[in-house]
Length: 154
Image (tube, rainbow, N blue to C red; front, side):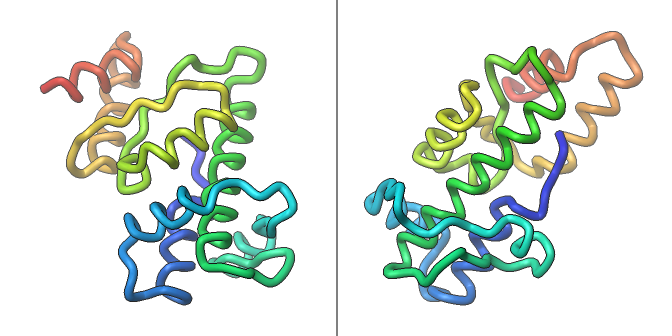
């Protein structure tokens, strides 16, 4: 998977700078309750990637509005990555790992943006496991999907 500076780390930077007393789960819950506002602020992706913290195209009216904008931008960036990786053959399913994957709401945003089902894999050390899955796939004739699925059931 291609990674970007626009990921869950931006939501955490937003939380730390604006609502350090909230957990990530609380912030995500607030964004879910807020919902979509087509006229609301958008995350400036280029500025956010360059600076390493969230930059919005206008002032926020509410904390939840900013959290929603970050989550939506991450979902859209994932969709861009899938198009770059898969071209005209998008996946039916994306296996989600890590903290953001715990949120059904965020997986739903990602599913809407990508058109692919978002399946949460409840595993520890997702980065290490992902590297191991890719290594096994590269050394064998097995697919990443088959290995990850087998390992997620273990």
